[in-house]
Image 1: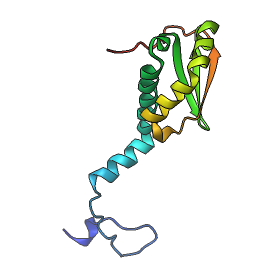
Image 2 (image 1 turned 90 degrees about the vertical axis):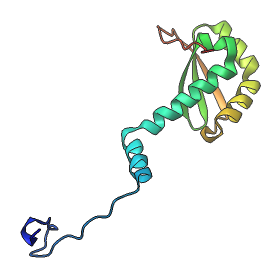
Image 3 (image 1 turned 180 degrees about the vertical axis):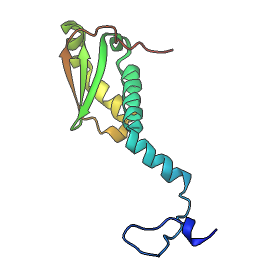
Length: 124
């Protein structure tokens, strides 16, 4: 290959850019996951799965929202279920902390709102 076909660096005259070394596939995939937001989607799915396991029957009446500053927002379809979940809050927090410790969930905030067709059912 002659020098004319090699890539040149910007701002250089006549100097050829050093060839790049291959990057480890793990680094490439990690960067791709960060750029595309896949890590956030995966974390959200982990939280969803942990909630389904922790909440039991009540999970069919809820939808997990976002985690902000350690507070997990949970949308609930009826105020009676909110009361039940408030009663179970210490146990729910303990189980969530055990199942997803990296999320550092230290509180739950419940909000009554129609769930539309986005109710998540426990998969058995």
